Amino acid sequence: MRLDKLLSDLGMGTRSEVKRYIRKGFAAVDGVKISDPGFQADPDGQKIFYLGKEVCYQKYAYYMLYKPCGCVTARSDGIHKTVMDYIREERKGLSPAGRLDLDTEGLLLITNDGHLSHELLSPAKHVKKVYEARLDGPVTDLDVKAFREGVEIGDDTPAKPAELSVSEEDASFVRVTVTEGRYHQVKRMFAAVGKQVLFLKRIQMGSLALDPALLPGEYRSLTQREIDELKKIESKRKMRYNTEI
Image (cartoon, rainbow, N blue to C red; front, side, top):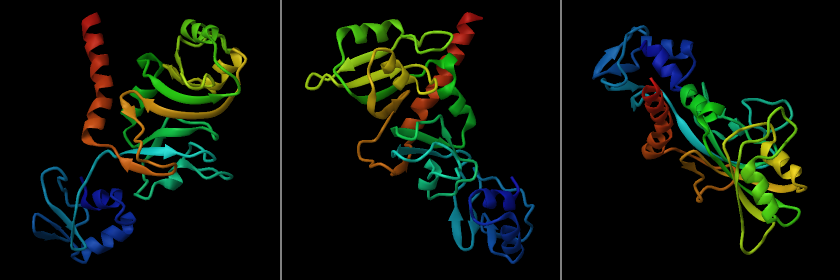
């Protein structure tokens, strides 16, 4: 990769700024000063220094954000604060994987790995999303049965079967697991059985669970184990495809 592009992608400055500093001798690769911005550097096999500090290149970045209520799941918005406003690192190429409503809080993955985002969000993958919800009334056995069978929410097809578990202490507090991502889906499913959602929080997506140590608006990088577990979705899909062939 061109040295100037590599450093610019890492947020070290604009392309023109990085080029200027490289030409002045402020970059080195494997201990050798480099003055050519177009020098081809291998970020995986070479040590790269810029302005006296070693830089580490990561092709992909993965962040777990506890999305708070009142912000929109978008890169930019002219009215509301966005989820990207909480990310302090270089945000070039980063986007939220999926979305949560303005008044919904909880787990959101921020990444520049478009392929993984597609795997998590594709309807064909049936990736589970788990939510906690507070309702305006107690959930009944009939509600649980309706969710298990798939409720009509006004679309061409009913919502796919969903798991609904009710708190033993409070029948208006539930945990629901869905495998789709339709518009306002959880709220529409409860509305179909005569319930209004007062509070909604996503706590899990696939294998990734919201870190209980995070407060609303806080985020952290995913661990390598969490990344590996998420990527097993693609491995399982390939195994199924090869078996079908």
